[in-house]
Image (cartoon, rainbow, N blue to C red; front, side, top):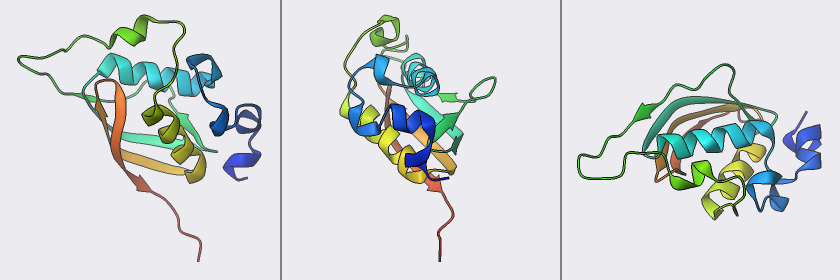
Length: 123
């Protein structure tokens, strides 16, 4: 099954992501994790059918700034807000991946910044 045929993705196409309410429950939980972490990285994130697999928790490595903001991002407390391009592009990339792993996902100020993909190339 490819990512575009998955029921969750049909109901919420990645191009239609504009606000927090447009996200699937899995996407919303992951984005909240980004905001709570604020700065750091997620070593491994499994992706199935274009959606993050969170299970019971998410292992992360927090970056603590001696003279900086270490509290969760203020948006973590908001029920409604427009999604930043970094978030919509990140979820678009997961949908395109379909099934695989994201490794060393770097989070900067509550937003996905960079990562590596482990995927199977069809030959």
